[in-house]
Image (cartoon, rainbow, N blue to C red; front, side):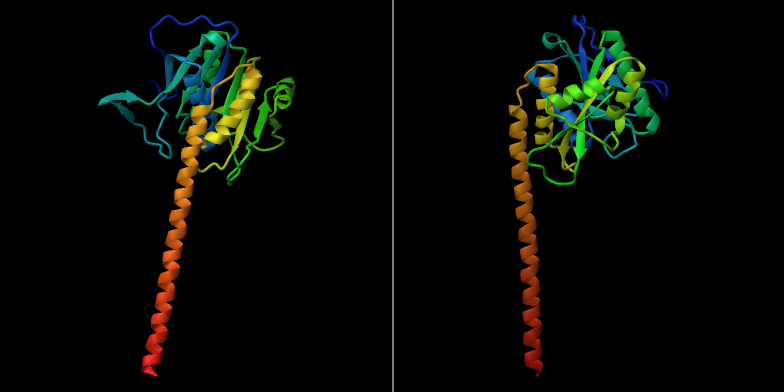
Length: 266
Protein backbone atom coordinates (compact mmCIF):
# COMPACT_ATOMS: atom_id res chain seq x y z
CA UNK A 1 0.00 0.00 0.00
CA UNK A 2 1.16 3.52 -0.73
CA UNK A 3 0.92 6.12 2.02
CA UNK A 4 -2.43 7.48 0.85
CA UNK A 5 -4.05 4.34 -0.52
CA UNK A 6 -7.19 2.68 0.79
CA UNK A 7 -7.32 -0.81 -0.66
CA UNK A 8 -10.45 -2.90 -1.27
CA UNK A 9 -9.92 -6.63 -1.33
CA UNK A 10 -12.81 -8.89 -2.31
CA UNK A 11 -13.10 -12.38 -0.84
CA UNK A 12 -12.95 -14.11 -4.22
CA UNK A 13 -16.46 -15.56 -4.41
CA UNK A 14 -18.78 -14.33 -7.19
CA UNK A 15 -20.34 -11.03 -6.14
CA UNK A 16 -24.08 -11.19 -5.51
CA UNK A 17 -26.33 -9.34 -7.92
CA UNK A 18 -27.85 -6.22 -6.41
CA UNK A 19 -30.43 -3.94 -7.99
CA UNK A 20 -30.06 -0.22 -7.21
CA UNK A 21 -28.54 -1.01 -3.79
CA UNK A 22 -28.21 1.35 -0.81
CA UNK A 23 -24.87 1.45 1.02
CA UNK A 24 -25.06 1.76 4.81
CA UNK A 25 -21.89 2.87 6.62
CA UNK A 26 -21.46 2.04 10.31
CA UNK A 27 -17.96 2.63 11.64
CA UNK A 28 -16.64 3.43 15.11
CA UNK A 29 -17.51 6.83 16.54
CA UNK A 30 -19.36 8.57 19.37
CA UNK A 31 -20.84 5.88 21.61
CA UNK A 32 -20.09 3.41 18.80
CA UNK A 33 -23.74 3.92 17.86
CA UNK A 34 -23.15 3.51 14.13
CA UNK A 35 -20.90 0.48 14.55
CA UNK A 36 -23.35 -1.32 16.87
CA UNK A 37 -26.28 -0.60 14.54
CA UNK A 38 -24.42 -1.80 11.44
CA UNK A 39 -23.14 -4.93 13.19
CA UNK A 40 -26.70 -5.75 14.20
CA UNK A 41 -27.89 -5.29 10.62
CA UNK A 42 -25.16 -7.55 9.24
CA UNK A 43 -26.00 -10.28 11.75
CA UNK A 44 -29.80 -10.04 11.78
CA UNK A 45 -30.10 -9.79 7.99
CA UNK A 46 -27.55 -12.59 7.45
CA UNK A 47 -25.23 -10.37 5.47
CA UNK A 48 -22.63 -12.09 3.29
CA UNK A 49 -19.13 -10.69 3.72
CA UNK A 50 -17.81 -9.96 0.23
CA UNK A 51 -14.65 -8.02 0.99
CA UNK A 52 -12.65 -5.75 3.26
CA UNK A 53 -11.11 -2.29 3.25
CA UNK A 54 -7.52 -1.71 4.38
CA UNK A 55 -5.68 1.54 5.02
CA UNK A 56 -2.19 2.38 6.27
CA UNK A 57 -3.96 4.84 8.59
CA UNK A 58 -6.12 2.28 10.40
CA UNK A 59 -4.94 2.20 14.03
CA UNK A 60 -6.36 1.09 17.36
CA UNK A 61 -8.53 3.54 19.26
CA UNK A 62 -6.67 6.45 20.89
CA UNK A 63 -3.45 5.52 19.11
CA UNK A 64 -1.60 6.70 16.03
CA UNK A 65 0.68 3.67 15.97
CA UNK A 66 -0.21 1.06 13.31
CA UNK A 67 -0.25 -2.64 14.05
CA UNK A 68 -1.93 -5.94 13.31
CA UNK A 69 -4.64 -8.09 14.86
CA UNK A 70 -3.98 -11.69 15.86
CA UNK A 71 -6.73 -14.06 14.76
CA UNK A 72 -6.00 -17.45 16.31
CA UNK A 73 -2.29 -16.66 16.20
CA UNK A 74 -2.26 -15.46 12.59
CA UNK A 75 -1.43 -11.81 11.87
CA UNK A 76 -3.98 -9.78 9.91
CA UNK A 77 -3.99 -6.14 8.94
CA UNK A 78 -6.65 -3.96 10.55
CA UNK A 79 -9.72 -3.79 8.34
CA UNK A 80 -13.35 -2.78 7.91
CA UNK A 81 -15.66 -5.35 6.29
CA UNK A 82 -18.11 -5.05 3.42
CA UNK A 83 -21.30 -7.13 3.51
CA UNK A 84 -24.01 -7.69 0.92
CA UNK A 85 -27.66 -8.37 1.70
CA UNK A 86 -29.16 -9.33 -1.69
CA UNK A 87 -32.66 -9.85 -0.28
CA UNK A 88 -32.85 -6.15 0.61
CA UNK A 89 -30.41 -4.79 -1.99
CA UNK A 90 -28.04 -3.50 0.66
CA UNK A 91 -24.30 -3.08 1.06
CA UNK A 92 -23.08 -2.69 4.64
CA UNK A 93 -19.68 -1.25 5.55
CA UNK A 94 -18.98 -2.31 9.14
CA UNK A 95 -15.84 -1.84 11.19
CA UNK A 96 -13.94 -0.16 14.02
CA UNK A 97 -11.54 1.91 11.90
CA UNK A 98 -11.71 5.29 10.15
CA UNK A 99 -8.36 7.03 10.13
CA UNK A 100 -5.62 8.57 12.23
CA UNK A 101 -4.69 11.77 10.36
CA UNK A 102 -7.10 14.28 8.74
CA UNK A 103 -6.43 13.37 5.10
CA UNK A 104 -6.99 9.67 5.80
CA UNK A 105 -10.68 10.32 6.50
CA UNK A 106 -11.00 11.91 3.06
CA UNK A 107 -9.25 8.97 1.42
CA UNK A 108 -11.62 6.50 3.09
CA UNK A 109 -14.74 8.54 2.25
CA UNK A 110 -13.70 8.76 -1.40
CA UNK A 111 -13.01 5.02 -1.51
CA UNK A 112 -16.47 4.33 -0.09
CA UNK A 113 -17.95 6.44 -2.86
CA UNK A 114 -15.83 4.53 -5.38
CA UNK A 115 -17.47 1.38 -4.02
CA UNK A 116 -20.86 2.98 -4.54
CA UNK A 117 -19.93 3.67 -8.17
CA UNK A 118 -18.73 0.09 -8.69
CA UNK A 119 -21.89 -1.47 -7.23
CA UNK A 120 -24.39 1.01 -8.65
CA UNK A 121 -25.35 2.70 -5.36
CA UNK A 122 -27.06 6.03 -5.88
CA UNK A 123 -28.05 6.33 -2.22
CA UNK A 124 -26.11 5.86 1.00
CA UNK A 125 -26.80 6.18 4.72
CA UNK A 126 -24.15 6.95 7.32
CA UNK A 127 -24.79 5.99 10.95
CA UNK A 128 -23.27 7.62 14.02
CA UNK A 129 -23.78 8.98 17.50
CA UNK A 130 -24.85 12.39 18.83
CA UNK A 131 -23.06 12.84 22.16
CA UNK A 132 -24.91 14.72 24.91
CA UNK A 133 -22.81 13.73 27.95
CA UNK A 134 -25.69 12.22 29.92
CA UNK A 135 -27.73 9.03 30.08
CA UNK A 136 -30.70 9.25 27.69
CA UNK A 137 -33.81 7.18 28.38
CA UNK A 138 -35.49 7.76 25.00
CA UNK A 139 -32.82 8.78 22.48
CA UNK A 140 -33.67 11.14 19.66
CA UNK A 141 -32.22 10.39 16.24
CA UNK A 142 -30.86 13.46 14.47
CA UNK A 143 -30.67 13.72 10.69
CA UNK A 144 -28.41 15.61 8.30
CA UNK A 145 -28.68 15.06 4.55
CA UNK A 146 -27.09 15.92 1.25
CA UNK A 147 -30.35 17.30 -0.17
CA UNK A 148 -33.50 18.84 1.44
CA UNK A 149 -35.94 16.15 0.14
CA UNK A 150 -33.81 13.41 1.75
CA UNK A 151 -33.86 15.30 5.05
CA UNK A 152 -37.62 15.84 4.91
CA UNK A 153 -38.22 12.14 4.29
CA UNK A 154 -36.14 11.23 7.36
CA UNK A 155 -37.97 13.78 9.50
CA UNK A 156 -41.30 12.33 8.34
CA UNK A 157 -40.09 8.93 9.56
CA UNK A 158 -39.26 10.09 13.07
CA UNK A 159 -35.84 11.74 12.87
CA UNK A 160 -35.11 15.21 14.26
CA UNK A 161 -33.46 17.83 12.10
CA UNK A 162 -29.95 18.68 13.27
CA UNK A 163 -30.20 22.46 12.95
CA UNK A 164 -26.60 23.30 13.86
CA UNK A 165 -23.36 21.58 14.74
CA UNK A 166 -20.74 19.43 13.11
CA UNK A 167 -20.70 15.84 11.92
CA UNK A 168 -17.10 14.72 12.13
CA UNK A 169 -15.29 11.79 10.54
CA UNK A 170 -16.26 9.75 7.54
CA UNK A 171 -20.01 10.01 8.21
CA UNK A 172 -19.91 13.78 7.82
CA UNK A 173 -17.61 13.81 4.81
CA UNK A 174 -19.80 11.33 2.95
CA UNK A 175 -22.69 13.81 2.95
CA UNK A 176 -20.85 16.54 1.08
CA UNK A 177 -18.69 14.31 -1.11
CA UNK A 178 -21.70 12.22 -2.15
CA UNK A 179 -23.50 15.35 -3.30
CA UNK A 180 -20.48 16.23 -5.47
CA UNK A 181 -20.91 12.84 -7.16
CA UNK A 182 -24.65 13.35 -7.67
CA UNK A 183 -25.65 10.82 -5.00
CA UNK A 184 -28.17 11.09 -2.18
CA UNK A 185 -26.78 10.71 1.32
CA UNK A 186 -28.38 10.69 4.76
CA UNK A 187 -26.65 10.67 8.13
CA UNK A 188 -28.57 9.38 11.16
CA UNK A 189 -27.11 10.19 14.59
CA UNK A 190 -28.49 8.42 17.65
CA UNK A 191 -28.46 10.41 20.88
CA UNK A 192 -25.96 8.93 23.35
CA UNK A 193 -23.96 9.69 26.47
CA UNK A 194 -20.83 9.31 24.34
CA UNK A 195 -18.47 7.84 26.94
CA UNK A 196 -19.25 4.16 26.34
CA UNK A 197 -20.79 1.92 23.65
CA UNK A 198 -24.53 2.59 23.60
CA UNK A 199 -26.88 -0.18 22.36
CA UNK A 200 -29.97 1.91 23.17
CA UNK A 201 -28.80 4.73 20.89
CA UNK A 202 -28.04 2.15 18.21
CA UNK A 203 -31.51 0.62 18.52
CA UNK A 204 -33.16 4.04 18.18
CA UNK A 205 -31.08 4.76 15.09
CA UNK A 206 -32.03 1.39 13.57
CA UNK A 207 -35.70 2.21 14.14
CA UNK A 208 -35.51 5.25 11.86
CA UNK A 209 -33.31 3.41 9.36
CA UNK A 210 -35.80 0.53 9.20
CA UNK A 211 -38.53 2.92 8.18
CA UNK A 212 -36.29 4.79 5.74
CA UNK A 213 -35.30 1.56 3.96
CA UNK A 214 -38.68 -0.16 4.50
CA UNK A 215 -37.11 -3.19 6.18
CA UNK A 216 -37.24 -4.75 9.64
CA UNK A 217 -34.06 -5.50 11.58
CA UNK A 218 -34.43 -7.66 14.69
CA UNK A 219 -32.93 -5.58 17.53
CA UNK A 220 -33.23 -8.10 20.37
CA UNK A 221 -29.47 -8.55 20.60
CA UNK A 222 -29.07 -4.81 21.12
CA UNK A 223 -31.71 -4.96 23.85
CA UNK A 224 -29.79 -7.74 25.60
CA UNK A 225 -26.57 -5.74 25.33
CA UNK A 226 -28.39 -2.76 26.85
CA UNK A 227 -29.51 -4.86 29.84
CA UNK A 228 -25.91 -5.98 30.43
CA UNK A 229 -24.69 -2.40 30.15
CA UNK A 230 -27.26 -1.13 32.63
CA UNK A 231 -26.27 -3.85 35.10
CA UNK A 232 -22.60 -2.88 34.73
CA UNK A 233 -23.49 0.78 35.31
CA UNK A 234 -25.49 -0.16 38.42
CA UNK A 235 -22.57 -2.22 39.75
CA UNK A 236 -20.24 0.69 39.07
CA UNK A 237 -22.55 3.10 40.86
CA UNK A 238 -22.78 0.75 43.86
CA UNK A 239 -19.00 0.44 43.98
CA UNK A 240 -18.61 4.23 43.92
CA UNK A 241 -21.15 4.60 46.75
CA UNK A 242 -19.37 1.95 48.81
CA UNK A 243 -16.03 3.68 48.34
CA UNK A 244 -17.55 7.03 49.30
CA UNK A 245 -19.20 5.52 52.39
CA UNK A 246 -15.94 3.83 53.40
CA UNK A 247 -14.06 7.13 53.07
CA UNK A 248 -16.72 8.95 55.09
CA UNK A 249 -16.62 6.28 57.81
CA UNK A 250 -12.80 6.44 57.96
CA UNK A 251 -12.94 10.22 58.21
CA UNK A 252 -15.45 10.05 61.07
CA UNK A 253 -13.29 7.51 62.91
CA UNK A 254 -10.26 9.75 62.46
CA UNK A 255 -12.17 12.75 63.83
CA UNK A 256 -13.39 10.73 66.82
CA UNK A 257 -9.82 9.55 67.47
CA UNK A 258 -8.56 13.15 67.48
CA UNK A 259 -11.30 14.12 69.95
CA UNK A 260 -10.29 11.24 72.25
CA UNK A 261 -6.65 12.39 72.11
CA UNK A 262 -7.63 15.93 73.06
CA UNK A 263 -9.72 14.70 76.00
CA UNK A 264 -6.81 12.54 77.19
CA UNK A 265 -4.30 15.42 76.98
CA UNK A 266 -6.63 17.80 78.85
